[in-house]
Length: 427
Image 1 (cartoon, helix red, strand yellow):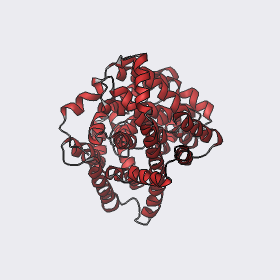
Image 2 (image 1 turned 180 degrees about the vertical axis):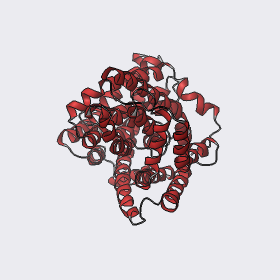
Image 3 (image 1 turned 60 degrees about the vertical axis):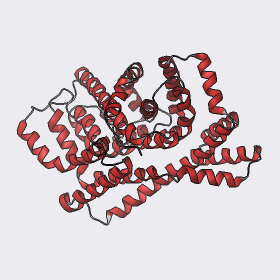
Image 4 (image 1 turned 135 degrees about the vertical axis):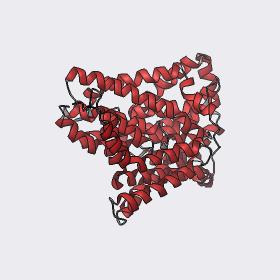
């Protein structure tokens, strides 16, 4: 059954068929070969999407839409400029810090790439950055958005592996900050080599003005992270609260978009949510088929025969996921691979919360690598550069991300200490 599934999946990728439809075809073929009624497929697919925490996905996507159009993202970028604009690398450092702010609200790497890139790349070019270098910084920093909570990939991992989404969110805070710091150091070095990025003298008055303009926007991550950390909200409830708050300050305080624009935001949110739910529905059927055929249990035994040392097992799994990221987008890779790989790593004592954050980060790197990297294509469009130019400019940043990956595998406590300390409510 595993080989049948993989054959159909890779055939779908090769011919360009959407992954969701490839999963659906695989499910039907496997049902026919197993002499299982097709009605079981419907029951299992409904079970996969009939899950309350899934409501967080459309709400967080819509929050990102409101941020981009309602003036929230722009004010956060101005605050980032006042905070780190004096560091060598200038606007490059601002772009990374802004992505950390933006990622703490939207949870989408693609939205981060589009929003921050459109605002920052033209100004970075004026400060001496080449178009590929400016685009590379804005594109690579988007991976922070799927680690710092909220995170749509972490929501999906929590659902398909039955892991606490609240704990996953809290676990993503420190690794997200570490990734941001690594990218800032890389930008500092590259700016020194290329003599790009003008710095501005740190001005306390400018920081105060930016803080006054953005303080209402800064309440958003407090609502999401503080509410979950304090046990006030579940992840889903935090998404609703964040949406209501962002709509209020965008419409009533900042007044930078008209209510009629909300219809277009709802349409875009519904399209993206529908894609995710269709993937999840068919992936649930596939996971059920593989489970009743003892595939996860067989994989656990085979991998344990190779090594039972957590570090080396995680290195093997990380290598596999990096390869998967080259040929598959993050969302389908998460819903397909998480149910198969989680039992393998937990069998040697790895915390599933830790593995969820690690898996999201590794597949996030896949968003930045050709030939399938979604953020890479968005970055090329926003920065108006070719794929070859952008990939070449991103090589130092790939190295920085891989260094962070090895550090997280070697020191899992970086990920787990905060959720272990926090009293977080369940889903």
